Amino acid sequence: MSWYSKYKGRSIGRILHFLYHYTNVDIAGRATISNGTILYCGEVIATYEWEGETDMPVFKFANDFFNKNQESRKEEAIADGKEYT
Image (tube, one colour):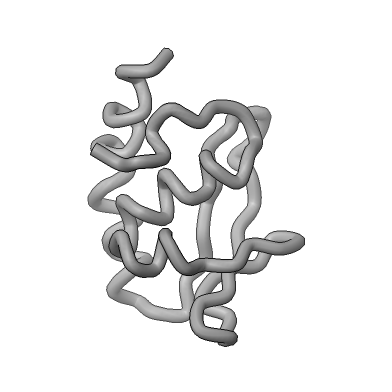
């Protein structure tokens, strides 16, 4: 379960929730989020947009491994957040 699971709406916490599931706890805990960009250790690791009218961010990672995680772990990340709805 993500520390950020309780966040809802288009918030930084919601972005971190999905980032945690697609990358790891270190990246989610140390990321800087600004204007659709995710920075980690001063480097852009991803950009994001909100999916339609939802509160789910869709990332474009610089790393293919994380892009594949996004595809395979999407349902897990959604389910993890539902406990708090």
